[in-house]
Length: 60
Image 1 (cartoon, rainbow, N blue to C red):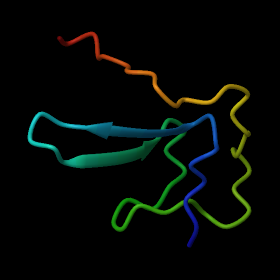
Image 2: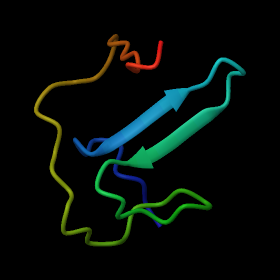
Image 3: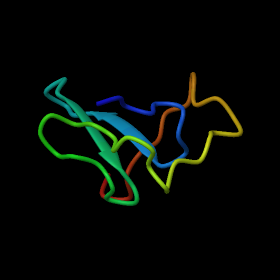
């Protein structure tokens, strides 16, 4: 199954232990291994590139 990294609902985060966490804001993905459903009805292309951005959680 593909992973739509260009979807606005796709989130990839790195933990303090350098673990890569991928998730879907809509919860439409397969958990293990992470994969987007084929023909996902929630897929929306990103309008702006996420390159170079760092997003911090409100827990920091």
